[in-house]
Image (cartoon, rainbow, N blue to C red; front, top):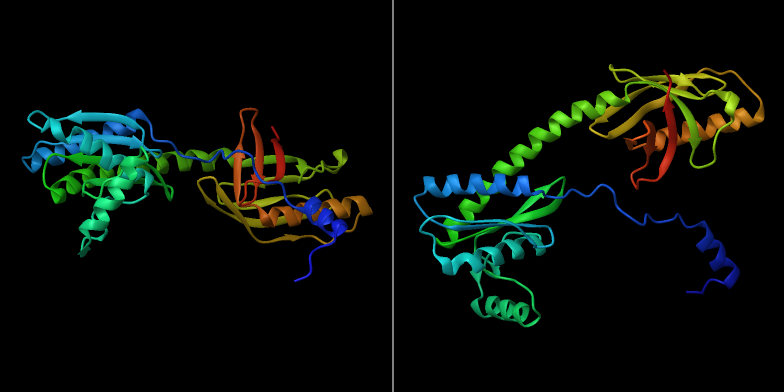
Length: 290
C-alpha cells in the first residue's frame, strides 16, 4: 500500500472533522440516588429475613453510600464494597469465572490475586450488580453477608428500584424538554458560517410535531419526531419553488441539508437553540422569535 505524499497527508489532516474535547452528555449517580438504592435493598433483605452490608459506588468504583444492617457480619463490609467496585469497573455483575455454569476456581483466584497485587479491587463472588442508565454504567451495588445468590438478589432489588425511579424522572423531564422547543425560531448560524442577516431564515415547531418556516426564499414544511432531546426532521423538508439571488439560494441549500442531519437539540442558559448531529457537532443555532 503506497504511503500518502506529504501534501496529500496535509490535505487529509486539514479536512478531518475536529473531535470533541469534552463530553457533556455523561450521566452521574448522585448521593440521593445511591441512598434510594440502599433503602430498596434493605427492604428486600428484610423480606428475605437476612442481614447484609450494602455498598453503592459510582462508575469509577468510588464509594458513595454504605449501610450495615443490624446483625450483619462486620467481616463482609470490605466484601460488599469490593463487589460494588468490581461490578462498576468491569461493567457487569460479579460472579465466578468464566461463568456460573462452568466455574474455574483457579482462574477466579488468579484474577483476584492479580487485581490485589496491582492495588485494585476485584472479586468473583456473587453480589455485585451494575447500575445502568441511558445505556451506560453509572455505578453499582455490592451486597455481602448472606449466600452469593441472596446477596445478588438484594443488590438486584436496589438496582431495579433505582432504575424505575430514574425512568419516572426521565419521563417527566422528557415532556418538559419537548415543550421548550415548541415555537418560532430565527436561525442565526448554519454550521459555523453565519447567515445573511436580511434572509430571515426561520423554523417553527408546533405541538403536533409539524415543522414549518422560511428558508429566506421559500416556505417549507416537514414533520418532527421528538423523544426527549432527540429530534429528527422528516420527510423532506418540502419547499415551494421560488428562485432567489445566488447567495440566498446557496444559504437555502445549506440550511435544508443541515436540517436533515439534525439528531438532537439543546437550549442553553441564554435561551439559544442548538440543533446538533449525532456527534454533538453544531448544525444550526437559533434564537426564539417573540
